[in-house]
Image (cartoon, rainbow, N blue to C red; front, side):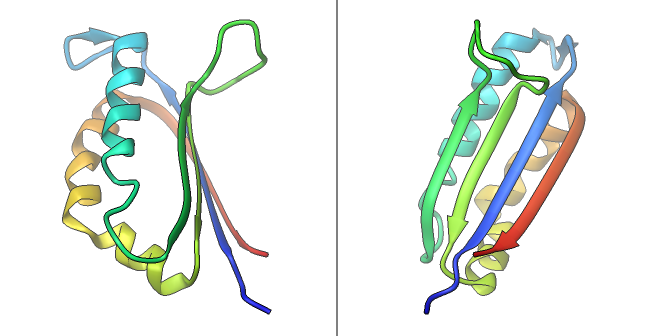
Length: 103
């Protein structure tokens, strides 16, 4: 039976950062995450979503991704495109939570 590695990350964004408001930065973060959706082999699912009005959310942006192996997740984590978005993420985030698990 194949193992799938789930990678879930959520971010709470600052009200203002990098000269923009939270909503603008949430859209930019989503676009940057979307640019990583197919950067390495082994990505099975990659959904970056902004919290939606009228639905409960305590954080602002979520990444729900699945990889076919730990090696694929490691390749993603170290890929230059992914590494390149980290300075922006670090500048706009107030908090970050991550949960990885195999299923």
